[in-house]
Amino acid sequence: MPYPMEDSSLVSLGDRPSVQIWYDSQAQWLYVQWRGSYQERAVGEGWEFLLRCLHQQPCAKLLNDARFAATGWAGREEWAGEALFPQLAAHGVRYIACVYPVALSARFSLDTMLDSTHQPFVAAFEDLATAYSWLLQR
Image 1 (cartoon, rainbow, N blue to C red):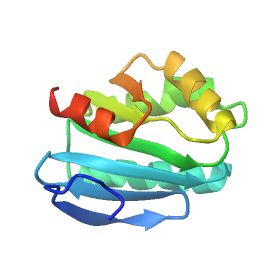
Image 2 (cartoon, rainbow, N blue to C red; image 1 turned 45 degrees about the vertical axis):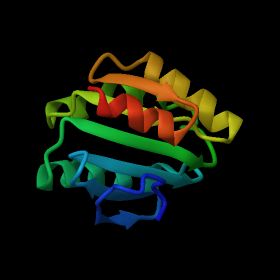
Image 3 (cartoon, rainbow, N blue to C red; image 1 turned 60 degrees about the vertical axis):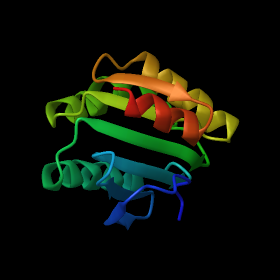
Image 4 (cartoon, rainbow, N blue to C red; image 1 turned 90 degrees about the vertical axis):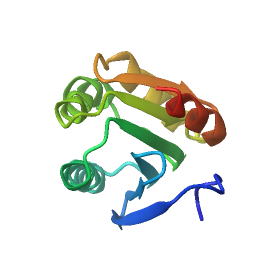
């Protein structure tokens, strides 16, 4: 299980080349795990899949795990922060806990993206356990 919380009750909502998504019925949020290198088409498909999952399973919270992202958004960070994250808010997401990628270029990309994000409220964390704990308190 990619989620280290023993009490977690995860239901897989599916996966795409760049993302896998679960619903945590205990915490009542989506757990989204991004992986691989940035490729605009794959990430776009992953983003559309995430929005479909939110339509299928509405949640006010999202645990965004980017530890396995290998590269950044290749200059599209501000656009993602300004255009994509507000779509999450429009789908009812109020809080996002992001776990930093290990890859430095992807980490820088996430920071740049978050600097351009005004909604929903997003906090970034070094590890999954801390992000999980923070999100539980919201």
